[in-house]
Length: 277
Image (tube, rainbow, N blue to C red; front, side, top):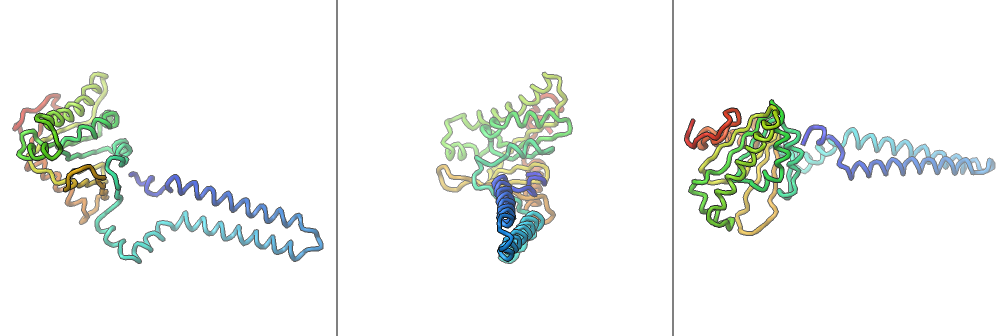
């Protein structure tokens, strides 16, 4: 979510504001028009209508301006009043999505310059956004780092049983994600297009959550403990010293340096053999 998006009104709120302004203008016009129709002999009634029109116009303008200019300050005031603001601010929390499947990662990929992913395989998630990643990697200064589960991880059989995968499914899905991302580079190079930098690692640790970073916005998506399909929430954080982003970013960097092996580097134009530095 860009700064402009955060400061902009949601579409529904914009429509409501537009409707309010239109109704305000119509009400003022109706009162002034009605005052003009009042016979000269009814001066008091005419003045009352004009006064109401002026009052409606003034109060309406003040209300609209206040909502536009100080709505964030008012929100901060109420959050602070109920004891939420300090905790949210300290954590750097920027967004909470209730359903991972419908979360707007499309815009995040399109607007980012640097992306980090730490997932098990995410073959469907990556596959459904492959055009976004190809467009992302069509920019020379863009960088995509992806850390996937190693197919030989001890956690593999447990996860396969938990996901009800058939033998070999997990390995196939991991390989599918690698090939899908590599295809973005291959297609761009075949079109004589300069590409960004894509690197893929694999690790053997037991996954605790999935992690996504789009520039200075970091997202944690937990796994459900119970079996069955449930809506998975998405927790987004701004990069903030001392906030949750510190834990997430440091944890990812340590995952790459201490527990993972590089298996693909687009600048080397080839798959790196497992275990090669």
